[in-house]
Structure formats: C-alpha cells, structure tokens
Amino acid sequence: MERRYTFFLYAAYSLELLLLFILQTTPLLIPELFGGKPLLMIPAVVTVSLMEEQVPALFFGLAGGALLDLGCSDNLGYYTITLTLICFLLGFIFRDYMVVSFLNAMGFTSAVTLVTVFFYFIFFILLSGRADFSYFVSHCLSRILYTIVCTVPLYFINKFLFRNLRDF
Image 1 (cartoon, helix red, strand yellow):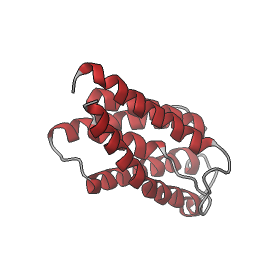
Image 2 (cartoon, one colour; image 1 turned 90 degrees about the vertical axis):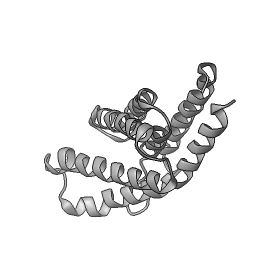
Image 3 (tube, helix red, strand yellow; image 1 turned 120 degrees about the vertical axis):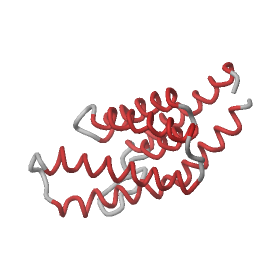
Image 4 (cartoon, one colour; image 1 turned 60 degrees about the vertical axis):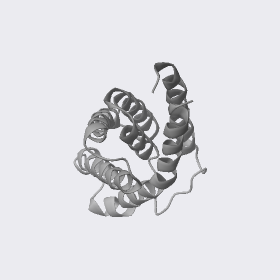
C-alpha cells in the first residue's frame, strides 16, 4: 500500500470508531438485551487489527480502549491497556502466521471479548464486593453475546474499507 493512501484508510477507521462510540454511549439508541449493551469498540479494533500491521493495530487498540474506558468503564486504563496489547499481538500474528477470514475474526473477537469482560468483572466488580457471580450471568454474559453478534457487520465493514481504500 502506498504511503499517501493510508491516510484515507486510517481516517475511515477513525471515523468508524468515533461513530461507534457515539452509538454505544447514546442512551436508548441501542436496546439493552437482558441488562447489557454491546461493547462495539472491541469488535471494531479487533477486526481492524486482523487486517493491519502491528503499529497501526496498536494505535487503533489504544484509541478504541480509551473510548471504551471513557464511555463504559469507571476504571480508566483497563480497556486501554488490554486492547492496546491484544491488538498489537493480533496485528503481529495475522501479518505473518494466519489468514484473515470471517471464522478467524469471529473466533478471535469472541475470545477477546470473553477474556476482557470476564477479567473486568473479576478485578473491578467481584473483588470490590459490588456484585456476585449472578451479576456476571445476568449482565456480563448478555453483553458478551451481544458484542459477538455485532462482530458480523463490523467485520464486513472493515474488510470493505481495507480492500477499497487501500488501493484508492
């Protein structure tokens, strides 16, 4: 990809993150299912990381994590650090060792969503004494499943952007 065309691709990804942040944080725009709303930043940055190299993946993971911390978390830094590291690793793995496909995107997004939400629950909800395991089943599990379902359109949007804006 020529260096001068990457601006359009990265601008499109950034606009996507900003629009998803607005969708995610606007009250009553996305309905809650069983007490949970989707974390749209996770599938967005994971699918971008599958298609980009390590450094752009790192920065989009950083931006998506920061937006997720600002919009949905009362502990600044957890999603920022977690998604930055995960996106860097995914950019490295998919650049050299794996093929980007829909099934890989669904699998990795499912794993990343499950791990990040579960550890957030353990560290910041369960250990602080704010809730018990029934809270995980009633709120966090629905959030995880809702986020995984939202991966489908985000994968195809990012694949479209990558293929069409790469050779602009």
